[in-house]
Each structure stands twice: as structure tokens, then as C-alpha cells.
Image 1 (cartoon, rainbow, N blue to C red):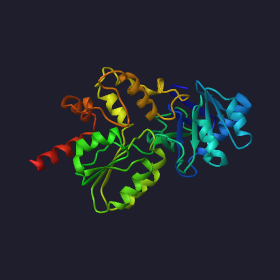
Image 2: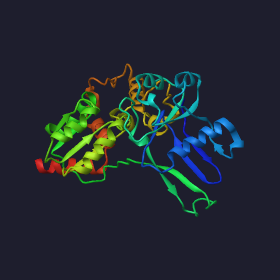
Image 3: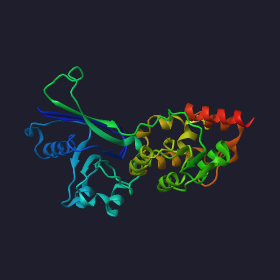
Image 4: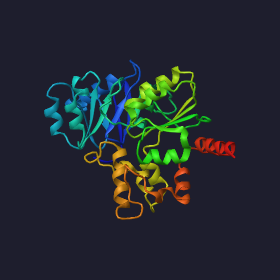
Length: 329
């Protein structure tokens, strides 16, 4: 399944609006924000149609899967947007993970907990809030519920890192080590980022992670960043391969990053990180830029190409590099 889909569902009392564009979307947030009512209305409309008093507007069928016969039901669904509540005991099972991988459906998971076994994006973690602005909506008598991104990282803070920690241990780490020098180290995996932060006391830290699959780690990492006195800046591009595509070292590859939701079929790619890697490998096959996650070719590290990659970094990080270079002169 590919595509970007708006979902509106409403009755006389309440109106919901959300947009999904990846195979996994997570809705978190506090109690009493309307998450349970959303699932109830979707289920009611699925069972009773317009006689339920509910209106649903979406190009795709929306369904709710609960515990009863979930495997059998999921196996019959294609091209659907499937909603699942955190109370479903199968949500954390290996079998559910296996069925999500390669599925021709999108999944909206309503849960306040992290789901470590699923590679979802930090950009697809949403909260839900009530919007009562009568200027925005025509019917002021309804309660309007809309989603908002919980984590919108723009690397806006000034940073002069004593330590740079990368999630990547291969090609991405090679690039960042060349960029930052001996201050850069690899955590060797996303689950090791938090332990690295915890043991690196009294240091100013820049942590670089692959945002396309870092969602399960965000809750704990952000909580630590709020609690610690250390200055930590988290930079989360989709992936290192995303930066290479954006840099247009290989002509016109940045186009694949602009509307990824039209290209990254959920049947083939468990996350957009997987898509960017596969796309880059295919576009560079049998060329001087032939890409491998294990080892970064020297052609990417020539002065001109290196500058193109650096140009994709946030301005605050580029400024930190300039300051560091001046201090070394």
C-alpha cells in the first residue's frame, strides 16, 4: 500500500481529522483526549454504515481490529487503514509484528507505550487535542479533535558538542567521524543511544539518529533529555541514505525524498529507512557511487560531494562546525 490519506469521521457531537502516509502511525497522549471515542466511531460506522449517524470521509476502508480472531481478520484485509487500541494483547506479539511486515495495509496504533518491536518514525507519533476555534470549523457545536506531532525536531539550539553520538556504525558513522573527528563515536544501534547519553555526564552532546525508525526510543530518550542537566541536541534525519539522496550526488535522487509515500510500498519496506537504502543501492548499482551500508565509497568523501552532504545538515550544526574549525586554527 502506498499513498497519503486524510481521514475525517464525525457525528453531531464530535469531529475527528487525521492524516496517514506511512505503514505505521502511532497516536499517544493523555487520557480523555478522545482516542477511545475515535475507535468506537470507526467500528460503529464499519458495522452500521450511515445508519450509525456517523459520516466517514476517506479513500480507504477504515477498520478496527480487536482481540477476537485478530489473525484471521487481518489476513483477509488489503488496502485498509487498520486501527488498534493499546488494550489489544496481541499488539506486542512477535506474530503481530510478522504480519505487519509485508502487509498491504496501513496501521494506526493507539497506545501510550513504546512499541520496541516496530520500526516507526518519530514524525508519525501524534498526540490528540480538542480544537474549539469556531473560526476554523463551521459547526461550533461540535468538539473537534485533531492530531499533532509530538516530536518536531528542528535542531534549532546552538550546540558546541564535546561528544557526537551516532546510531549508525557503518557508512553513516564514517561520514560523521570524518566531519566531527575524534569527538564522534558510534552507539552501534538505536537501542544503545539512551545508555550512551546516560553514561556521558557533564558533556554537551549531539546525538544523530535515523528518524524513520527511531520512534520506539523517543519517549525514553526525550524524558531523559528533559530530566538531565546535560545539554543534549537530538538530530534525526530520516536516515543517512536520505541525506545522500537529498544531496543529489546522483542526479535527481532527491525526488524520491519529496513524496516517499507514493513510492515506499508497505508490502516491500518495513520502514522508509529500508526504502531509502534500497533506492540508493538500485540507483548507484554498477557506478562509481555503488552504495553499501557497510562501507562508504571514497567517491562520497571527495571535497565537492562531501560539501553537498554537509549542505543538508541543519544550520545550527553547520555553524557549530564553523566555530570548531576556527578554534582549531
